Image 1 (cartoon, one colour):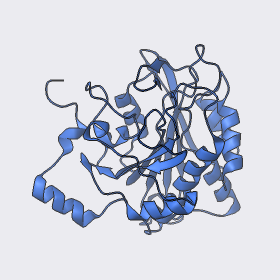
Image 2 (cartoon, one colour):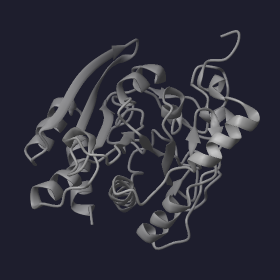
Image 3 (cartoon, helix red, strand yellow):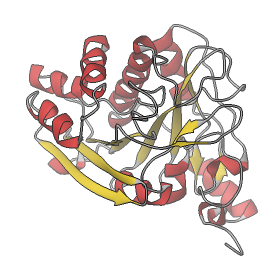
Image 4 (tube, helix red, strand yellow):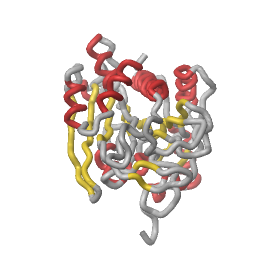
Length: 307
């Protein structure tokens, strides 16, 4: 269970003056030594990127062969102050606290895990249909530069995805795997983990080609959940927090701790299985065949022609 850690982090983040330094200090007190904070300024203010590395027993940092998982808290701001008071619906993200507690108790995962998110309690709100979303002080391209790393061999991108009418069930859903411009079949291994964690039939968030292209091209995107896929050759799977109704990303009082805990627990179980070689994000042979048959789709990771 990760509910106590979720509530602890939620309480820490629900503060008008929270910043990356406060989050980093909290994590370090729980035994996480590899925590970095970088403040980045944009046209609409500043945000703090927080990066946490949790070494595995047989991971790359130890000279082992276990693959490295990236977990990205892909969100806008955690608050829209002064327009909105309190933590907003979009304020979820990667939770490293549980991994730190596990490591202190002696439960270390086989592979390294890199967790990255950003902390901004005063972010802008941006228009979106059917409900408005949270924005960020920096562009999506800047976020990718600070959140996506070459060392990440597979990525889970966690994002509240309630501003739509596509998945009408509260909880979490995953997306099909996205790799180098291709929307691939949904991983059977991750579907297994999802249904074990939730105790329900797995929900899959549908994607369109527009959703996996970079922001800024004038196309409609369901949200930013697959933006990391535009900046890496690694397979990316979105982990969406969902609802029965369309909920604005800027709505306060709309976060459900039990749903966030589901996302945390799912990420932890994927990290265990992926590092142990027991869960694949995609079929490498099939990917090679589709590229051989139809060519590269990496142009979908760019801004396209005429932009």
